[in-house]
Amino acid sequence: MQVKEMPVVFDCQGEQLIGMLHQPDGSPWLGVLIIVGGPQYRVGSHRQFLLLARHLAAQGLPVMRFDVRGMGDSQGSPRRFDQLDDDIRTAIDCFLVACPGLQGVVLWGLCDAAAAATFYAYQDTRVKGMVLLNPWVFTEQGAAKTYLKHYYWQRFSSSGFWRKIFSLQFDYSGSLASFLALIKQAAGPRSHDSRPSGLVSVAQDLPLPVRVRECLKRSVCPVLLILSGRDLTADEFKDAVNKDSQWRQLLKETRLARLDYAEADHTFSSAVWRDQVAEWTLNWIKQL
Image (cartoon, rainbow, N blue to C red; front, side):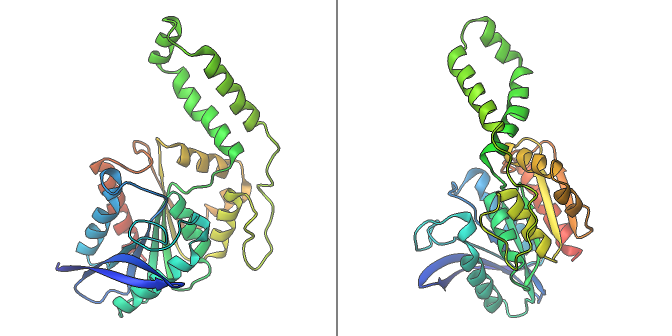
């Protein structure tokens, strides 16, 4: 299939945003908008966005990837992942103008971009689906518990760790201080992680796992959730879900699909992992 790649420039509150459109032949009704997360290196694992866009476009799906304000080639000051609603909205506007046959978009995001997608999607009926990879649901207490549960368990199970211990090449005092600090942080006051939200819009002061959950509740579109097996961000998400009955109930809804990739790291940095994510994304979107 012939695919045209062309840059796009569009305005967001008086500042210019830069994107790249991957436009195949034909008149598909659905396109994919790739949202960039935090500061990232442009090659290596983060060439994933370019390769994903080209793979989907070659199969007939229009794709647009763009830099939010303060990121990459776009103008403006850097902003937090929970302040991207205007950027996403204007990107969708630009996408639909550039591809007049589109009736809606699927938002695709990794880590904090996945959280940003959930914050926005329920507000815009043009969003017809979301693909969320290793969503960012960080809290200091949750991160400490995840680190203790997953990282230290792997360390204690490592033969290299015990070799350092017995060869006296280990920083006993520093490691003990770090371990005790994590225990103190993990044992901090319990967050109101199950507080119901009856507000018209989701309160921004909710703990991040709750805010993501409540935004997903308000969205009616299908969701594909992809979780890595070798990633502390994914581990924290899984732990947050497992301890929250409302999260568990939400993930039972038929519109939410979950795929776990046990071997993959946070950014799906190998060609095999990256290609599998692209294929999962494509197959899922074809069902919409």
